[in-house]
Length: 120
Image (tube, rainbow, N blue to C red; front, side, top):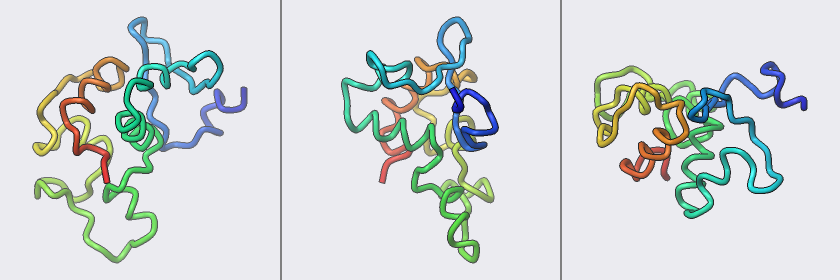
């Protein structure tokens, strides 16, 4: 219940929605809400979890710990490689683009077509 209060889940948590535009809250009973969409692949589930929690090895995450380094995106077009930039604009990850990356089905397609996104 406390997770549903937006102040307690953190500002870095990616809200995903279903086809009816309902926010999918993390839930573990009976396959959960969004976790069930990734259960067919451990790798996909890992990358999705990194992206959803914003704990991927991207420059936005590293900025929290190493503020003295260069955090520009490897594409060379953005000063900080962020989750939002990767999902919406980065040319390195343009094999699938859709303006509704918050829709769970589009988010999964993005991850499947960009296997290096949010991977280590």
